[in-house]
Every structure is written in structure tokens, then in C-alpha cells.
Amino acid sequence: MYGYTTKKIAFTSAGIMAVVDENDPRQAAEKPHLDVVHQAGTKILATKTISESKPETIGEMKVWQKISRDLSTVDSHPNKMLVGCTYKPMMQE
Image (cartoon, rainbow, N blue to C red; front, side, top):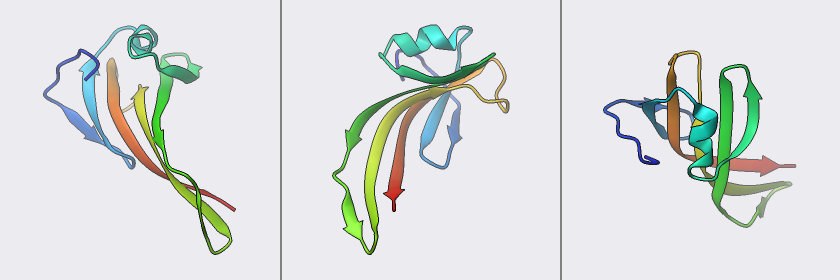
């Protein structure tokens, strides 16, 4: 994933992520041209939408699907970075 190799994965609510070693996750986000949407201390979240369906109206709600490439750091995996694709159902009233 993004030029990294791994033997470990993590399951998230939105997809399966590769767990990789990386000392500088911000620099790693630049390689696949991800947009950093949150950074605080050692935490980072970078993403790039690769697909987004057109909203459909169901009742009074609009629903659609968004697929993104994501990179993040989390407390559960210190000195590691999670990278992969996420699949999110989106809703708006």
C-alpha cells in the first residue's frame, strides 16, 4: 500500500487498513497526494476522495457512498501508520 509492505492489518468501521512503520506520516501523506484534514501533535488524518456516488433521496434523507484513500495515526498503534481505503455511507437530512 503506497509503496509500503506489511504483514499486519487493522479493521476499522469503514474498511481494512494496512499497519505500517513510518516515522513521518505527514511526509507519507504527500506521496499519494492526500489532503491533511487534521493534525495535532503526532496525530494525523489525511484523505483523498476517489469515488462519490450521486445522492439519492430516501424518505426525507439524502444518502450516498464515498470511497476514500486514507492515512492516519492512532493511539492503539504507536509509531505506526494506518493506510488503506475506506467505504463510508453518507447521510444528510
